[in-house]
Image (tube, rainbow, N blue to C red):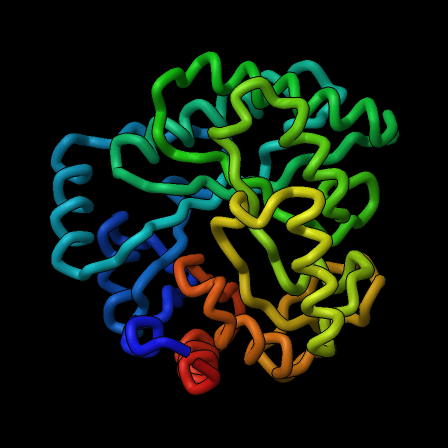
Length: 283
């Protein structure tokens, strides 16, 4: 490890609550020693959009600078389904993504993480085409936006798309402005989708496959979550680091991988303080 890498703080943080104001997420993250955070820019389980006041935008930017949180990541609403065969839900999902992007632009947020979507029985190819069309339409409505839509790996439950690297790669390949897309690797989702991550060789194989399909350069966010459920179960249940079916070894490898030093790592687990401390000890 070179001296410069050794002296740099890891880009490590957690998904923080915005209760009481958007800037509170930054303050909570700073209090936990986070160097990066993830947040929602609105209530995640409601369609109602949030219009940001200029005063809260300015406050968020000021607090972010003082706290030294960089980058800031947003997670899109869980209601959004970019593969929905239901015309009304599909339109609402596209509109919601456009609003998500506009809020991110106002706040200077770098990446907007979203689950690709559920095809609801219409088939994988149909669903991928549906998502591609959605992303093209969203990009057209947000021309010039700097935030990158970041497609997250899913557990592959039911008709969910994004459970395999190949599916995400095909979406990225087909989108016209695919330089505006990025990739988020969720360790729990990837494990329960069927990828074994419990040995160094498995880890190297995963990243080799990711490079061959999606491209290593597109990996911009990592969600660090252990899993309550076993490999291939396709059940998304996060667990504290080292207490689940994955175990500690994968997280040691990620925290010590110099090629990932500039990739923000976000925990979405129950014990924020304990998990952050443990991950820092691995680094």
